[in-house]
Length: 447
Image (cartoon, rainbow, N blue to C red; front, side, top):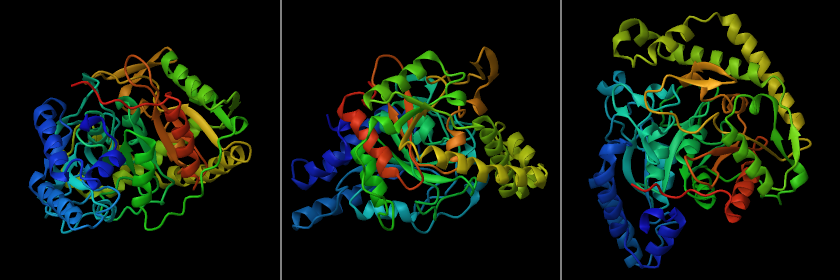
Protein backbone atom coordinates (compact mmCIF):
# COMPACT_ATOMS: atom_id res chain seq x y z
CA UNK A 1 0.00 0.00 0.00
CA UNK A 2 1.49 3.32 -1.11
CA UNK A 3 0.30 5.11 2.06
CA UNK A 4 2.30 2.76 4.30
CA UNK A 5 5.48 3.07 2.22
CA UNK A 6 8.47 5.02 3.47
CA UNK A 7 9.84 8.06 1.68
CA UNK A 8 12.93 6.13 0.62
CA UNK A 9 10.76 3.33 -0.80
CA UNK A 10 8.57 5.74 -2.75
CA UNK A 11 11.59 7.55 -4.22
CA UNK A 12 13.15 4.24 -5.27
CA UNK A 13 9.92 3.13 -6.99
CA UNK A 14 9.55 6.46 -8.79
CA UNK A 15 13.16 6.47 -10.01
CA UNK A 16 12.81 2.84 -11.19
CA UNK A 17 9.62 3.92 -13.06
CA UNK A 18 7.51 1.37 -11.20
CA UNK A 19 5.13 4.21 -10.42
CA UNK A 20 5.12 7.84 -11.51
CA UNK A 21 5.43 10.81 -9.19
CA UNK A 22 2.08 11.98 -10.57
CA UNK A 23 0.42 8.70 -9.58
CA UNK A 24 1.94 8.87 -6.09
CA UNK A 25 0.70 12.43 -5.70
CA UNK A 26 -2.84 11.75 -6.91
CA UNK A 27 -3.19 8.78 -4.55
CA UNK A 28 -2.19 10.97 -1.60
CA UNK A 29 -4.45 13.84 -2.71
CA UNK A 30 -7.40 11.46 -2.88
CA UNK A 31 -6.65 10.17 0.62
CA UNK A 32 -6.35 13.68 2.02
CA UNK A 33 -9.58 14.83 0.40
CA UNK A 34 -11.41 11.81 1.74
CA UNK A 35 -10.11 11.74 5.31
CA UNK A 36 -8.69 15.13 6.28
CA UNK A 37 -12.09 16.76 6.83
CA UNK A 38 -12.40 14.48 9.88
CA UNK A 39 -8.80 14.92 11.08
CA UNK A 40 -8.05 18.57 10.19
CA UNK A 41 -4.33 18.22 9.56
CA UNK A 42 -4.06 20.73 6.72
CA UNK A 43 -4.60 24.48 6.95
CA UNK A 44 -3.53 25.10 3.33
CA UNK A 45 -3.52 22.76 0.32
CA UNK A 46 -1.43 23.68 -2.73
CA UNK A 47 -2.23 20.72 -4.96
CA UNK A 48 -1.85 22.73 -8.18
CA UNK A 49 1.75 23.51 -7.34
CA UNK A 50 2.28 19.92 -6.23
CA UNK A 51 1.12 18.62 -9.61
CA UNK A 52 3.64 20.88 -11.35
CA UNK A 53 6.43 19.60 -9.11
CA UNK A 54 5.46 15.96 -9.64
CA UNK A 55 5.41 16.52 -13.40
CA UNK A 56 8.95 17.94 -13.21
CA UNK A 57 10.13 14.81 -11.37
CA UNK A 58 8.60 12.53 -14.01
CA UNK A 59 10.03 14.61 -16.85
CA UNK A 60 13.48 14.52 -15.27
CA UNK A 61 13.39 10.74 -14.99
CA UNK A 62 12.15 10.40 -18.56
CA UNK A 63 15.13 12.50 -19.66
CA UNK A 64 17.54 10.20 -17.84
CA UNK A 65 18.21 12.61 -14.97
CA UNK A 66 18.15 11.85 -11.24
CA UNK A 67 15.71 14.23 -9.50
CA UNK A 68 17.15 13.38 -6.09
CA UNK A 69 16.77 11.05 -3.09
CA UNK A 70 13.20 12.24 -2.41
CA UNK A 71 12.01 11.87 -6.00
CA UNK A 72 8.23 12.22 -6.03
CA UNK A 73 7.86 11.99 -2.23
CA UNK A 74 4.86 14.00 -0.91
CA UNK A 75 5.76 16.25 2.01
CA UNK A 76 4.01 18.94 4.07
CA UNK A 77 5.15 21.45 6.70
CA UNK A 78 3.86 23.10 9.85
CA UNK A 79 2.30 26.43 8.98
CA UNK A 80 5.08 28.44 10.59
CA UNK A 81 7.38 27.56 7.63
CA UNK A 82 7.40 30.07 4.78
CA UNK A 83 5.74 28.75 1.60
CA UNK A 84 5.96 31.03 -1.42
CA UNK A 85 2.54 32.51 -2.17
CA UNK A 86 1.04 31.73 1.26
CA UNK A 87 0.91 33.92 4.35
CA UNK A 88 2.91 32.40 7.19
CA UNK A 89 0.33 32.45 9.98
CA UNK A 90 1.88 30.29 12.72
CA UNK A 91 -1.62 29.19 13.68
CA UNK A 92 -2.73 32.73 14.44
CA UNK A 93 -5.39 35.21 13.38
CA UNK A 94 -3.10 38.18 13.86
CA UNK A 95 -0.66 37.24 11.09
CA UNK A 96 -3.36 36.56 8.48
CA UNK A 97 -3.21 40.12 7.18
CA UNK A 98 0.51 39.84 6.41
CA UNK A 99 1.63 39.59 2.78
CA UNK A 100 2.39 36.13 1.39
CA UNK A 101 5.89 34.74 1.65
CA UNK A 102 7.99 35.42 -1.42
CA UNK A 103 10.11 32.27 -1.09
CA UNK A 104 10.03 28.89 0.61
CA UNK A 105 11.98 28.45 3.85
CA UNK A 106 15.56 27.32 3.12
CA UNK A 107 15.08 23.89 4.71
CA UNK A 108 12.00 23.35 2.56
CA UNK A 109 13.96 24.38 -0.53
CA UNK A 110 16.55 21.72 0.27
CA UNK A 111 13.94 18.96 0.42
CA UNK A 112 12.36 20.11 -2.82
CA UNK A 113 15.76 20.25 -4.50
CA UNK A 114 15.99 16.56 -3.58
CA UNK A 115 12.77 15.85 -5.50
CA UNK A 116 10.10 16.22 -2.79
CA UNK A 117 6.61 17.39 -3.75
CA UNK A 118 4.95 19.91 -1.40
CA UNK A 119 1.29 19.30 -0.50
CA UNK A 120 0.71 22.29 1.78
CA UNK A 121 0.79 23.62 5.34
CA UNK A 122 -0.28 21.85 8.52
CA UNK A 123 -2.19 22.79 11.67
CA UNK A 124 -0.56 23.77 14.96
CA UNK A 125 -1.14 25.46 18.31
CA UNK A 126 -1.23 29.24 17.95
CA UNK A 127 2.32 30.61 17.79
CA UNK A 128 3.58 27.10 18.70
CA UNK A 129 2.58 27.66 22.34
CA UNK A 130 0.88 24.41 23.29
CA UNK A 131 0.93 20.64 23.39
CA UNK A 132 -2.54 19.85 22.01
CA UNK A 133 -3.17 21.46 18.56
CA UNK A 134 -6.58 22.69 19.65
CA UNK A 135 -6.64 25.94 17.72
CA UNK A 136 -9.37 28.57 18.12
CA UNK A 137 -8.79 29.86 14.57
CA UNK A 138 -8.07 26.73 12.52
CA UNK A 139 -9.88 24.09 14.58
CA UNK A 140 -8.59 20.99 16.37
CA UNK A 141 -6.42 18.29 14.82
CA UNK A 142 -7.65 14.79 15.66
CA UNK A 143 -5.47 11.78 16.39
CA UNK A 144 -5.69 9.33 13.45
CA UNK A 145 -5.56 6.35 15.83
CA UNK A 146 -8.62 7.65 17.72
CA UNK A 147 -10.24 10.84 16.38
CA UNK A 148 -11.76 11.55 19.79
CA UNK A 149 -8.22 12.22 21.09
CA UNK A 150 -5.63 14.94 20.59
CA UNK A 151 -2.72 14.61 18.18
CA UNK A 152 -0.40 16.47 20.55
CA UNK A 153 1.31 19.72 19.76
CA UNK A 154 2.34 22.14 18.82
CA UNK A 155 3.21 20.25 15.61
CA UNK A 156 0.05 18.17 15.79
CA UNK A 157 -0.88 18.52 12.13
CA UNK A 158 2.58 17.38 11.08
CA UNK A 159 2.50 14.23 13.22
CA UNK A 160 -1.10 13.34 12.42
CA UNK A 161 -0.51 13.74 8.67
CA UNK A 162 2.24 11.11 8.74
CA UNK A 163 0.24 8.78 10.98
CA UNK A 164 -2.77 9.09 8.66
CA UNK A 165 -0.78 8.27 5.52
CA UNK A 166 -1.25 11.76 4.04
CA UNK A 167 2.52 12.17 3.57
CA UNK A 168 5.45 9.95 4.51
CA UNK A 169 7.53 12.93 5.61
CA UNK A 170 6.62 16.25 7.27
CA UNK A 171 8.43 19.06 9.06
CA UNK A 172 7.68 20.62 12.42
CA UNK A 173 9.30 22.60 15.21
CA UNK A 174 10.13 21.73 18.81
CA UNK A 175 10.59 24.31 21.56
CA UNK A 176 9.56 22.39 24.67
CA UNK A 177 8.47 19.08 23.13
CA UNK A 178 6.48 20.02 20.04
CA UNK A 179 8.03 17.33 17.82
CA UNK A 180 8.55 14.60 20.40
CA UNK A 181 5.14 14.79 22.05
CA UNK A 182 2.92 14.62 18.92
CA UNK A 183 5.21 11.96 17.42
CA UNK A 184 4.69 9.86 20.54
CA UNK A 185 0.92 10.39 20.74
CA UNK A 186 0.46 9.66 17.01
CA UNK A 187 2.76 6.63 16.95
CA UNK A 188 5.46 7.82 14.53
CA UNK A 189 9.15 8.75 14.59
CA UNK A 190 10.30 12.32 15.21
CA UNK A 191 13.72 13.97 15.44
CA UNK A 192 14.58 17.04 17.48
CA UNK A 193 18.16 17.82 16.47
CA UNK A 194 20.75 19.64 18.56
CA UNK A 195 19.87 23.31 19.09
CA UNK A 196 21.02 25.48 16.16
CA UNK A 197 21.99 22.48 14.03
CA UNK A 198 19.21 23.27 11.50
CA UNK A 199 18.86 26.74 9.96
CA UNK A 200 15.63 28.36 11.20
CA UNK A 201 15.51 31.07 8.54
CA UNK A 202 12.13 31.37 6.89
CA UNK A 203 10.18 30.15 9.93
CA UNK A 204 8.16 32.13 12.47
CA UNK A 205 9.85 32.01 15.89
CA UNK A 206 8.50 31.23 19.34
CA UNK A 207 11.46 31.12 21.75
CA UNK A 208 14.86 31.77 20.19
CA UNK A 209 16.57 30.09 23.16
CA UNK A 210 14.89 26.73 22.49
CA UNK A 211 13.41 26.62 18.97
CA UNK A 212 14.43 23.59 16.87
CA UNK A 213 13.28 22.39 13.45
CA UNK A 214 13.00 18.70 12.63
CA UNK A 215 11.28 15.95 10.63
CA UNK A 216 8.52 13.41 11.25
CA UNK A 217 8.47 10.05 9.46
CA UNK A 218 7.44 6.40 9.73
CA UNK A 219 11.01 5.06 9.66
CA UNK A 220 14.41 5.90 11.08
CA UNK A 221 15.91 5.79 7.59
CA UNK A 222 13.55 8.57 6.48
CA UNK A 223 14.38 10.67 9.54
CA UNK A 224 18.09 10.24 8.82
CA UNK A 225 17.70 11.21 5.18
CA UNK A 226 15.56 14.25 5.94
CA UNK A 227 17.97 15.39 8.65
CA UNK A 228 20.91 15.13 6.25
CA UNK A 229 19.10 17.06 3.54
CA UNK A 230 17.92 19.82 5.90
CA UNK A 231 21.50 20.88 6.66
CA UNK A 232 23.92 23.02 4.66
CA UNK A 233 26.43 20.27 5.35
CA UNK A 234 26.37 17.00 7.28
CA UNK A 235 28.51 17.43 10.42
CA UNK A 236 27.03 14.40 12.17
CA UNK A 237 29.60 11.98 13.52
CA UNK A 238 29.49 8.35 12.35
CA UNK A 239 27.02 6.20 14.25
CA UNK A 240 28.71 3.99 16.84
CA UNK A 241 27.76 0.47 17.77
CA UNK A 242 25.22 0.66 20.58
CA UNK A 243 26.87 -0.82 23.66
CA UNK A 244 24.33 -1.94 26.28
CA UNK A 245 26.53 -0.78 29.15
CA UNK A 246 26.47 2.74 27.74
CA UNK A 247 22.66 3.00 27.63
CA UNK A 248 20.73 4.09 30.72
CA UNK A 249 17.14 4.75 31.72
CA UNK A 250 16.61 8.14 33.34
CA UNK A 251 15.05 7.78 36.77
CA UNK A 252 13.85 10.32 39.33
CA UNK A 253 11.84 13.05 37.62
CA UNK A 254 11.54 11.01 34.42
CA UNK A 255 9.66 8.17 36.07
CA UNK A 256 7.61 10.05 38.66
CA UNK A 257 4.03 10.47 37.53
CA UNK A 258 4.29 8.43 34.35
CA UNK A 259 1.46 5.99 33.68
CA UNK A 260 2.44 2.31 34.01
CA UNK A 261 2.17 1.70 30.26
CA UNK A 262 4.58 4.57 29.59
CA UNK A 263 7.15 3.13 31.99
CA UNK A 264 6.60 -0.27 30.36
CA UNK A 265 7.38 1.29 26.96
CA UNK A 266 10.68 2.64 28.30
CA UNK A 267 11.51 -0.75 29.78
CA UNK A 268 10.77 -2.39 26.43
CA UNK A 269 13.10 0.03 24.65
CA UNK A 270 15.80 -0.55 27.27
CA UNK A 271 15.46 -4.30 26.81
CA UNK A 272 15.82 -3.93 23.07
CA UNK A 273 19.09 -2.06 23.57
CA UNK A 274 20.31 -4.47 26.26
CA UNK A 275 20.35 -1.72 28.88
CA UNK A 276 20.13 -2.41 32.61
CA UNK A 277 21.61 0.80 34.05
CA UNK A 278 19.74 3.75 35.48
CA UNK A 279 20.92 7.35 35.69
CA UNK A 280 19.76 10.53 37.39
CA UNK A 281 19.71 13.93 35.73
CA UNK A 282 19.64 16.14 38.83
CA UNK A 283 17.22 19.04 39.26
CA UNK A 284 15.16 18.14 36.19
CA UNK A 285 12.07 19.64 37.85
CA UNK A 286 13.89 22.94 38.26
CA UNK A 287 15.02 22.74 34.63
CA UNK A 288 11.41 22.39 33.55
CA UNK A 289 10.42 25.40 35.68
CA UNK A 290 13.26 27.48 34.23
CA UNK A 291 12.23 26.45 30.70
CA UNK A 292 8.68 27.61 31.45
CA UNK A 293 9.94 30.99 32.63
CA UNK A 294 12.19 31.60 29.62
CA UNK A 295 9.57 30.37 27.14
CA UNK A 296 6.83 32.61 28.52
CA UNK A 297 9.14 35.62 28.77
CA UNK A 298 10.59 35.40 25.25
CA UNK A 299 7.20 34.58 23.76
CA UNK A 300 5.59 37.44 25.65
CA UNK A 301 8.25 39.92 24.55
CA UNK A 302 7.90 38.82 20.91
CA UNK A 303 4.14 39.48 20.97
CA UNK A 304 4.13 42.41 23.40
CA UNK A 305 2.85 45.00 20.92
CA UNK A 306 -0.05 42.84 19.73
CA UNK A 307 -0.89 41.84 23.30
CA UNK A 308 -1.35 45.53 24.06
CA UNK A 309 -3.19 46.49 20.88
CA UNK A 310 -5.02 43.33 19.72
CA UNK A 311 -5.51 41.09 22.76
CA UNK A 312 -8.92 39.90 21.53
CA UNK A 313 -7.35 38.39 18.40
CA UNK A 314 -5.24 35.84 20.30
CA UNK A 315 -6.42 32.31 20.97
CA UNK A 316 -7.93 32.43 24.50
CA UNK A 317 -5.69 29.50 25.48
CA UNK A 318 -2.54 31.38 24.42
CA UNK A 319 -3.19 34.98 25.47
CA UNK A 320 -2.97 34.72 29.29
CA UNK A 321 0.28 32.74 29.19
CA UNK A 322 1.94 35.27 26.87
CA UNK A 323 0.68 38.16 29.01
CA UNK A 324 2.03 36.58 32.18
CA UNK A 325 5.35 35.89 30.48
CA UNK A 326 5.73 39.46 29.25
CA UNK A 327 5.33 40.70 32.83
CA UNK A 328 8.04 38.54 34.37
CA UNK A 329 10.88 40.42 36.11
CA UNK A 330 14.23 40.32 34.31
CA UNK A 331 15.82 38.82 37.45
CA UNK A 332 13.77 35.64 36.97
CA UNK A 333 15.13 35.16 33.45
CA UNK A 334 18.68 35.95 34.55
CA UNK A 335 18.53 33.25 37.23
CA UNK A 336 16.88 30.78 34.83
CA UNK A 337 19.70 31.25 32.31
CA UNK A 338 22.34 30.85 35.03
CA UNK A 339 20.73 27.59 36.09
CA UNK A 340 20.61 26.48 32.47
CA UNK A 341 24.42 26.55 32.25
CA UNK A 342 24.69 24.44 35.42
CA UNK A 343 22.12 21.93 34.21
CA UNK A 344 23.87 21.56 30.85
CA UNK A 345 27.12 20.76 32.65
CA UNK A 346 25.36 18.09 34.75
CA UNK A 347 24.01 16.45 31.60
CA UNK A 348 27.46 16.48 30.03
CA UNK A 349 28.76 14.56 33.04
CA UNK A 350 26.24 11.79 32.36
CA UNK A 351 27.43 11.51 28.77
CA UNK A 352 30.94 10.75 30.01
CA UNK A 353 29.49 7.41 31.14
CA UNK A 354 26.56 6.89 28.74
CA UNK A 355 25.94 7.41 25.03
CA UNK A 356 22.14 7.09 25.23
CA UNK A 357 19.58 8.08 27.86
CA UNK A 358 15.99 6.81 27.69
CA UNK A 359 12.86 8.50 29.04
CA UNK A 360 9.11 8.61 28.34
CA UNK A 361 8.05 11.12 25.72
CA UNK A 362 4.79 11.83 27.57
CA UNK A 363 3.26 10.97 30.94
CA UNK A 364 0.31 9.19 29.28
CA UNK A 365 -1.18 8.16 25.96
CA UNK A 366 -3.22 10.70 23.97
CA UNK A 367 -5.85 12.45 26.12
CA UNK A 368 -9.32 13.24 24.84
CA UNK A 369 -9.95 16.39 22.84
CA UNK A 370 -11.13 19.12 25.17
CA UNK A 371 -9.78 17.35 28.25
CA UNK A 372 -8.60 19.94 30.77
CA UNK A 373 -6.75 17.94 33.42
CA UNK A 374 -4.79 14.74 33.97
CA UNK A 375 -3.64 12.89 37.06
CA UNK A 376 0.06 13.01 37.96
CA UNK A 377 1.25 11.32 41.16
CA UNK A 378 -2.33 11.12 42.37
CA UNK A 379 -2.95 14.84 41.90
CA UNK A 380 -5.21 16.38 39.28
CA UNK A 381 -3.22 18.98 37.32
CA UNK A 382 -3.86 21.12 34.20
CA UNK A 383 -3.31 19.09 31.06
CA UNK A 384 -1.83 21.65 28.65
CA UNK A 385 1.33 22.55 30.60
CA UNK A 386 1.93 19.08 32.04
CA UNK A 387 2.04 16.97 28.88
CA UNK A 388 5.62 18.20 28.43
CA UNK A 389 6.88 16.99 31.81
CA UNK A 390 9.64 14.85 30.30
CA UNK A 391 10.43 16.78 27.12
CA UNK A 392 11.04 20.28 28.51
CA UNK A 393 14.15 19.53 30.60
CA UNK A 394 15.84 18.04 27.51
CA UNK A 395 15.15 20.86 25.03
CA UNK A 396 16.10 23.31 27.81
CA UNK A 397 19.72 22.38 27.03
CA UNK A 398 19.29 21.62 23.33
CA UNK A 399 20.11 17.90 23.29
CA UNK A 400 19.24 15.78 20.23
CA UNK A 401 16.36 13.34 20.68
CA UNK A 402 14.67 10.72 18.53
CA UNK A 403 11.10 9.97 19.61
CA UNK A 404 10.31 6.34 18.78
CA UNK A 405 6.90 4.62 18.80
CA UNK A 406 6.93 1.37 20.77
CA UNK A 407 4.99 -1.37 19.04
CA UNK A 408 2.05 -2.91 20.85
CA UNK A 409 -1.73 -2.93 21.21
CA UNK A 410 -3.75 0.07 22.28
CA UNK A 411 -2.95 3.74 21.83
CA UNK A 412 0.58 4.74 20.72
CA UNK A 413 3.34 5.10 23.31
CA UNK A 414 6.58 6.97 22.65
CA UNK A 415 10.06 6.91 24.14
CA UNK A 416 12.76 9.58 23.96
CA UNK A 417 16.22 8.41 22.84
CA UNK A 418 18.48 11.20 24.07
CA UNK A 419 22.11 11.71 23.01
CA UNK A 420 24.85 14.24 23.71
CA UNK A 421 24.90 17.48 21.74
CA UNK A 422 25.92 16.87 18.13
CA UNK A 423 25.40 13.11 18.42
CA UNK A 424 22.23 12.73 16.36
CA UNK A 425 23.82 9.74 14.64
CA UNK A 426 23.99 7.90 17.97
CA UNK A 427 20.30 8.45 18.75
CA UNK A 428 19.30 7.50 15.21
CA UNK A 429 21.40 4.32 15.38
CA UNK A 430 19.65 3.28 18.59
CA UNK A 431 16.25 3.98 17.02
CA UNK A 432 17.19 1.91 13.96
CA UNK A 433 18.23 -0.98 16.20
CA UNK A 434 14.84 -0.96 17.90
CA UNK A 435 13.12 -0.74 14.53
CA UNK A 436 15.05 -3.73 13.12
CA UNK A 437 14.05 -5.76 16.18
CA UNK A 438 10.37 -4.91 15.66
CA UNK A 439 10.26 -3.06 18.98
CA UNK A 440 9.76 0.35 17.37
CA UNK A 441 7.19 0.56 14.59
CA UNK A 442 4.94 3.21 13.06
CA UNK A 443 1.99 1.63 11.27
CA UNK A 444 -0.39 3.83 9.30
CA UNK A 445 -3.63 4.40 11.21
CA UNK A 446 -6.68 2.55 9.94
CA UNK A 447 -8.99 5.29 8.69
